[in-house]
Amino acid sequence: MRECSRQFHAQVVTMSGSPLLARLYGIAAAKFPDWMLYEAMFRHPEALAESLRAEQAQHRAILDAIAARDPEAAARASLDHILSLGNDLETYLGIPRELIQQKEKQFLRTPLPCRRSP
Image (cartoon, rainbow, N blue to C red; front, side, top):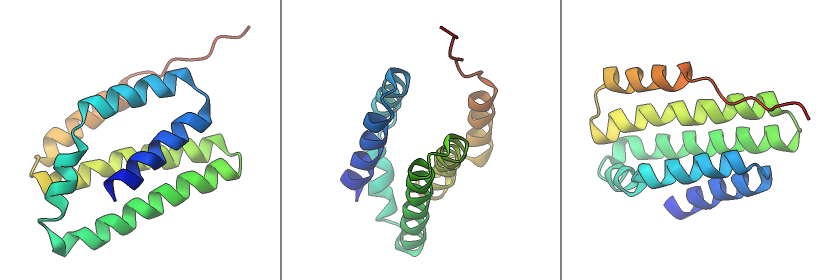
């Protein structure tokens, strides 16, 4: 499961052809110990099935947007996927919702780099 998720994300990054996305993904993958989350998920079987269904649906939404060549929908689906991680961090690792929301606000306030016209 964890490996499938990792492969999904790596494939999306590769297909994007974006050096910026590759760099951001590399930083996120190095900073976030996803093994801790997946290990904790298996200790909460009452919530595990729903979390896995949600993750699969989010991945499907991203793929559908990419297949439709709809960058806005792909960006929205990707952001929804990233932000949903907060629910898992709270549920499985006990990270306080307030801290997660504070970090989300910092993330969402940070302007994204714009492409410069040639």
